[in-house]
Image (cartoon, each protein chain N blue to C red):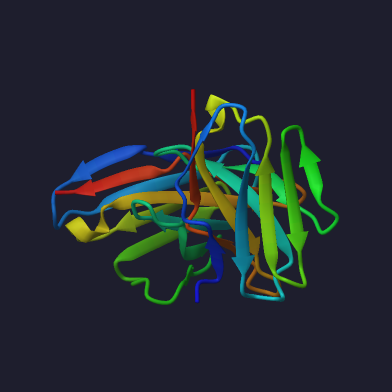
Length: 111
Length: 114
C-alpha cells in the first residue's frame, strides 16, 4: 500500500464547477499535511496546509480527519487557471522528518 | 518561504557522461537540503537528504555511488548523476525546509539522457 494515495483523476470540469479531491495516508503518526499544486513541468508550490479544524483560503477548503487518515480539498467556482496537478503531501514525525507525496490528481477546467 | 535557485533547468547529455545539478538557498543558510526525482505521471520521490559538512543520507534503493551529493556550504548542494543512462532521464528537484516557512522547491532540472 502506498503511504499517500490520491484519486488518480483526471478530473475535467467546466468553469464554475465545484470539485473535490480525496487523499488517504497510511502512517498514523504523520504530523503535518499539505496540498501542493504542480503545473506541467514545473516545481510543486504550496497551496495550503491542512488542519484538523478544517481551513479555508478563498475558493479552497481543506479538511483533515485524523481518525480516518483522510484529507480532502474542495475547490469552488473553478477557474481555468486552476488547471494543474494537485499533490497531497504528508510530513512524517520523528527524527526523520520528510515529505511524502501522493502521485497527484490532474485537474483540467474547461471553458 | 526560502528562495531556492536550481540550475540548470534542462540538460541533455550522452549516455555514459556525468551531469551536475546545483541547488542554492539564496536567502537562508540551509544545513539540510532534499533531492527528489519525479518520473512522468508519478509522484516526487525523495532520493536523499543532503547535510552540510557531512555525508548525505540516501533513501533505500538509491545508489550513492551513482548519485553523488555534495553539500559543502550552507547555501549550496550539488547532485551529480554519474555515468548517466537513459533510465536516469527524469525531473530532479531540490528542496529546502525553513522553520516557520515550510518547504520550498527549486524550479527543477529536466534531465534527458540520449
